Image (cartoon, rainbow, N blue to C red; front, side, top):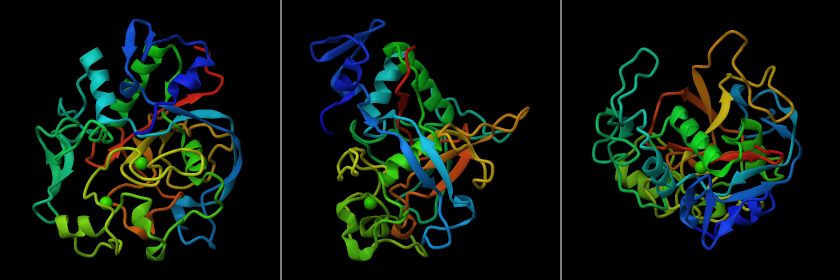
Length: 321
Ligand SMILES: [Ca+2]
Ligand SMILES: [Ca+2]
């Protein structure tokens, strides 16, 4: 992982740095236990796709203009080490560990996929962020965390730091992922994609024996998660926006952009209704190359936890609390 930038980002907001650690509200952070934040300069962009874009589909329509304000976004996905520090400080038990129901359905552990058996995916009691069914290092992105778990993390971080941390919105995520690009699909097999992303590659094709899926022709070196920041940053200093793990965002899920906000805010459930599904953005180590786009969006229920879904944190630029 590259040097933590949160210190420089937050010094300007008046937080106290003590040696290598940050002391705030009695929680001491080491450099590796704190997400590092990048200031994303705001602007207007076209969110979604039109018929001209290879990534076009109903979910990414209609193409619409959105104005995003300046905000901070963690340059990396939240790591296993960072999440472990939160758990150590709070004793928090995740939805996977307590076998939380998903809606009215039983759900034991995390939804994982066996590497040994083809197409063997499902709920496995005992799997969780500590044991997602494959080996992870502290620098890998945390997985098997639900949207509710991610909310618990940002709530704790907000209290610990004294700032309103939150998940990014769909608009913020796409704006930051595109980093100025008007084209949603970046790379093809001709572009040495394995130098840039951890996605469905030859190593994974061999390990999972996946049939009928489109693996890239190259080998990025990772069957599952890779250390955050292992691959190159995008033009505004953000890592793994296009790959590694899918990421929770703040928004309630809607199947298209009809009626979506144009001010960069998170889309809320219709008035009087609770939000059952939350949006996921980016792409992940299971994504076929032709699906690795800045427009890609999907959703799962808020209590769902999966072996290839994690999150990163955001902070409004005017957050004074
Ligand atoms: Ca890979
Ligand atoms: Ca990602």
